[in-house]
Length: 170
Length: 378
Image (cartoon, rainbow over all chains, first blue to last red; front, side):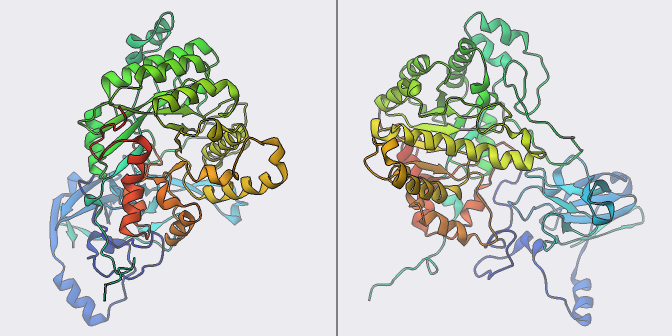
């Protein structure tokens, strides 16, 4: 658990699932994860890519397929997920009540019900769902989408494997 | 010209700087731990089930009637957190900025469904003694509530008087889960009598259980979603209605009453509904001297599970409908699956003064303690 209010200062001012209001005095910190950021221009994207630092968080063998673990990078806690060889990074802060989103025991699938199935229960997204251990809010790891509130999307960190090393861009 | 400080211009106090009294946290009692404190022959039974595997609030012969009526799919959600020692509780409460925690049981949230009156009373006595011995600590900011066993109101009254002068006991827990008859029935009068006499508040606490009493025929729902919505809420409301019907606040005017784990959105509804019914049915409850909401506004309402509307300002509006600034008390329900981190209540747009009241000052008044958790009424 965090030792202080996990860096959400003011980000969730009007309630985690309200549209973002003004954030006057507080710096977004980790909470930028759930904010809908304005789409940057091409030139800005390139500049941002250059500014982002790559951090090595371990060897590829430390992150076997089907596992996930939290690393601390650039002052942020990031959950690194290996889903069938694809790597993803999500913030370890749940926008609901700042819970340790990526510290649950396992990624799992979940239940869905679709019209084409006549609304029958179906198990889907096997291995792709992370549930916050505090209240069970489910997020789809590859897209960062909150299943209960699809307008909430977590920031996704770029995670690559190069030369057998796992690197996160922050 | 004096500067007018409006809520918008006021600098928001930090949660770290506010006194936070958490009116509902849960210890974890087990048959094995209570056995040494339990009278014979019931101690034999507790020893016998000491090694039985437990699920969440579910041990046969101790806390029956768990509600796993649906398929259990794998999930990362840890819905079965427990706290086993006061040191662990202190550490975890500090992580969520809680200064003082008020202790409730885990399994014995369901004590009212135990069919053997003597066993239930023995369990309550064992728990009360065990709690004081092992958990209560003003130093650690952990203060306890004794169980008032509904199956034996005379014994419960004895227990209340036994612990009344303990500095680390601050309240009486009234179990509501699976309860029949409801609080308000005259057979429970010895409990109110003892609580009022000893100046201890009573705190109603329910839990989701499936039991053939109103409103616990929750098997009608196919989901925990349904049961959890209706279990706590209708239970507390039914008990409150019955307490008003029999005039508990009139017959025990000094008795302080708190309602836990119901959230707060229902409070204006019940006040309004009771007041409306009173117009037509006054002659059924002639004991009341004022309209029902008058008595309800003097009770205390714990925030957990705090509702989370899209606009949290709605909660401030709701609170204004029942004088909530002065009678709402923060609770986390740590470590349960539906606990509230105080940050959610902190986000409700309130003045600093109102926020301080909700987070701590109202609770100090309810429990008659000071900011260090010392009783003021000994």
